[in-house]
Length: 326
Image 1 (spheres, rainbow, N blue to C red):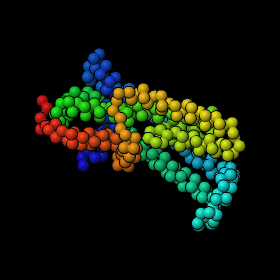
Image 2: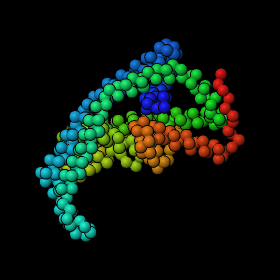
Image 3: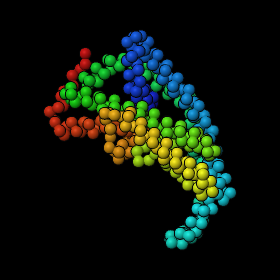
Image 4: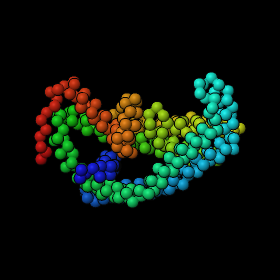
């Protein structure tokens, strides 16, 4: 109960410590543990606070505008083609004769806009809580980096496995955190950035908002940025903007999607990976249980559980009695 209010910031601190530890190790050799930990923590703070505030502010400003633009398009008849298709096929759907597509689109866009506005408003209203959690995260990050050696000795002594399996599990955990956070966020951020720039160049509404949305979908297996740019290209084609539609479709498939295909094998070479379906369930289930940190903790918990089950199933004698670390 004492630690429960600090679970999320402490979890983020542990994830960040794993991600930045290679750079921290180099600083330790030159400046010592305490100074290196302080320098690394300051570097992380600058990287999080600067770009984070800029993106969050623009995202909050454009979120409402994105769906207001959709409402205007519906009211202006931009989706007349969809109504024509609906009129043709609704006679074959039981109970669909009384449904008006324009009204449904208006209601859907209004509901989505209200949901997004409420979430963004709540995020801004909880700014004080966010600042406090950020402070706890950075505060904990300093101590996790400074005392990493003693923490790892304690964890090695507590894991009930023989040394080869214990080291493999530690390495797998590190690789999965790297795959979920470092590599995943780098790829998703680049895809969201390129997608947002593409939307801006084509004159589409709320490019920052849609860029962030594309970045989020880029984190999810089996989905990706196409969830945003493909419907946008179809909408452009349906409203007579064929040149923009073809440009968006070609750039989305040829540039935005290619970023993942090129960078992911390079960043994750020889590192632990998870089955695509298992990763998908672990990500969504992790977010449902833990919140945003579930994007990391979900796959991590599933991978650790699978690793332990595999060890027990293959070699029960591998489990040893934990010895207290010295």
